Length: 210
Image (cartoon, rainbow, N blue to C red; front, side, top):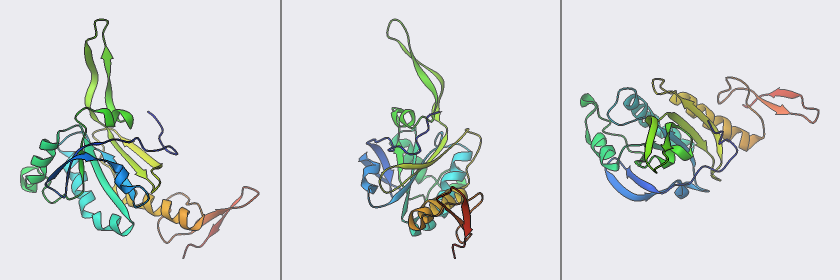
């Protein structure tokens, strides 16, 4: 598994569904550079069981991310048409109607490969035949990208394991607090807690963040 923290987020241009219904052809995270933080997350597939709970939970907290100047973007290996259909399907029928943040189509699986969350890999035979070894879907990867396009946090869960949206918000808070104050955040830190200030001798001291 590649560690992307401290590196530029892999670039891409792909089809996506935005605002719950509009299909766009050249969606890219470049639109957020120098403007917004990005929580970019992968999920295995549309019309599944755990995935809608995560996507709907992100939607419920979308206003909180917006308050933090943070865009939320999702991605799976489904087509833009599958995304669109899922977005039009009511919750009672297993859909995610009401989700408004972008859903990126990674039908070629190259985005998942570049973020190293694809649950398998391609194998090439001696005669040029191509086969896929594994599951042609994405693990539940999440990447926090700063305004300069750098990955500052990543988390990858296996497919059965849903993520905590509160933890994603906490990491945004921690990154922004560090950027604004130069203080580092200890274990279980949350907004309003004491932080730590590194000293020249390498000893960190607790400071009040209030």
